[in-house]
Length: 184
Image 1: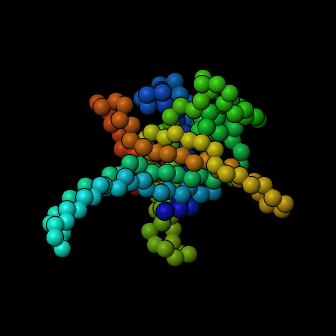
Image 2 (image 1 turned 30 degrees about the vertical axis):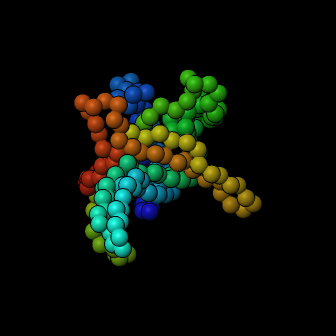
Image 3 (image 1 turned 45 degrees about the horizontal axis):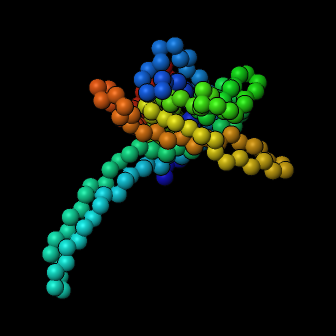
């Protein structure tokens, strides 16, 4: 599992139910991301072993298949609009209500993440742009929360980023990475 720290900004843009771009969607921007854990998801290939006598005669092994990534995102400050975009329900500037019917269930979204990029790994290194991650087809849900005395309650989301196969003419990868000089 990879943990991204030094996240400078995320942007969540709603998609239509089929995963296509929603021209009327306004991206939601947040700057209070504490961490983002990325875990690749694979489906193991099947394996068959043919034995005969006292030895193995043949082994057939399918390749493992990359399905996408599972993300766990921790946010330091409650952002109700972001919460509604990721998990559904109704959210505005100062409140959120969980989904109560099928019209309030979450739509898929695109998640863009900008992480500070450094050329060297020591304390004297200067920032050299950003690494931009784009997760093209995401669906989210609430993560665990635990509030305790003298500690902070942190918003947590569990997000599944997968390839959207519903539109064969425009299949985008589950995750993309690129080095960029600035956040655009």
